[in-house]
Image 1 (tube, helix red, strand yellow):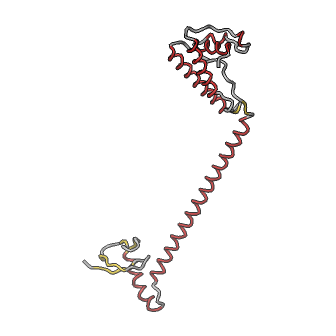
Image 2 (tube, helix red, strand yellow):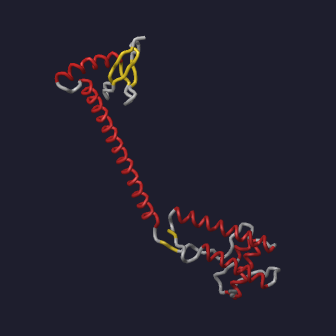
Image 3 (spheres, rainbow, N blue to C red):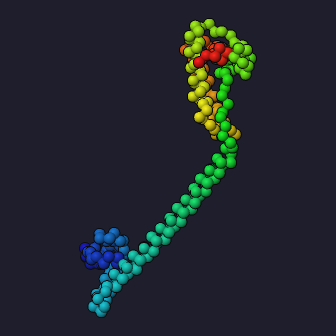
Length: 219
């Protein structure tokens, strides 16, 4: 098998390859090139080195490297342009969201505090009117010790205060305010059911105990 000595057109590294191979890869820079082209460049290198001292094949490698640099610069500019477009769209989205909150929020008001536990099972709640003076409020006394009823009244009052306290103000008309009120209402429903189960009474009884506490001024 005959061996041929060639030079890489990119880095000008010398290497020995079988003469029958059509192409090879430079072990120094990884450039893949044709053997015939490399041989012609190697031949020209000797003449150029004698006349000018600068290999022709090296100049060819420099031209190819310059082409790669230009391609890299073009891709970098494209990526920068894409990021600028993405950043602009994101900025517009943030501004739009802020404007939506500002114009849809409206004035801030304290959410209406429920006067009684509102449960579908407790139909008697509809007949209770706590807008009257405490002495005029009608209620049914639940069959539990008064100390237990007072504790239930205090627990319910504290739960309402923590869920609908004066410090928690939300926009009165926006979608966020409606969603928050719905969530707080669900929390109140679960707590009323829990208290009823703990004491072995119904949600209706919780409503009656709250009405009694309002009428008697329990603290």
